[in-house]
Length: 251
Image (cartoon, rainbow, N blue to C red; front, side, top):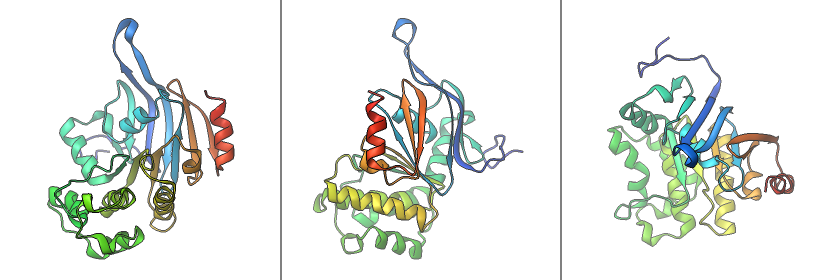
């Protein structure tokens, strides 16, 4: 069956999944397999953390699953849509319409207010803002009194909450977060993680987070551990101590 993007659809329940996902950089002796024939599913309405040593492939996996990078071989699906068969223009549209992003660097436009940053994706897509949902999200991240402020007038924690609100404002199918607490102090980080947990529990959102922090991973439902481009273990109902102990064995 063909979907709206003109590609074959698969009947799946996962929000995103990969089949034989492989990403190779370089050639010959310099060739590096960042991820190597990974099969994985990211359940809908769940919070998945991805962990592993530096160079394990965790960010590469997330970028390929989010359509920010393309696989060398294998397949990546967002719901029914096979990302690996889309051209760049269609992949850009899928990212805009179905995916939310939270990055360590916030990625806010400095000349825009907090509200304008949150609603920017709607302006780009030519869509109307759902004001009721906007108010719900803004209230959940506690920035209602900062909507007229520009990023330079906000603390790092407030900027990241704006970025989180932007990621959820369009009601995406899935939110990808790349080290979202890396630039935050412990309190601001805990506030953001608490919001991400609430987004899953109360708003039926799907979260996938790359992190190096066992405390952050403990907010998730499941942790995937990567090493040398492979998924080497999974952990459900993680605790910070259990995650830390497992990470120690991965180097």
